[in-house]
Length: 148
Image (cartoon, rainbow, N blue to C red):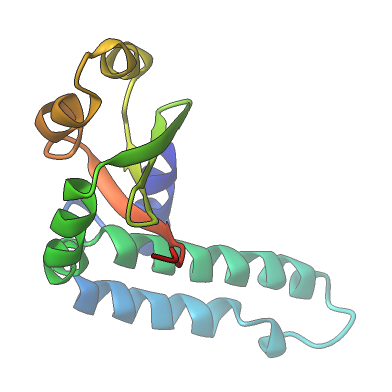
């Protein structure tokens, strides 16, 4: 959740992420912090290099959790969560679930007590469908090709 808040603050996003306003803020920030804007040897060039990477990462991250993106990928997401859980990992408040179809999704804000309830559940997928999938912000982390 800290990462989401940090990126929202960088782009000036208050509540919901709207792709149109996010794209406009992204373009303005890139213009301001593009490394080519500074001459070689300028101490701000190194800072601009770091800032531009942060801006690019933040933009792609926020686009991946935007409601419009989630809605556009809803069918694929439904198919993935229906395939069953192959593996999962919990670090801090981030739960990473790899599904049987090879996709991996990150769920933000999943606390340790919720994770413990999940692993102690007799029906892991059922618990996740009721308590994880509808309640936490998520994004696709990666998609691996799975040979049939």
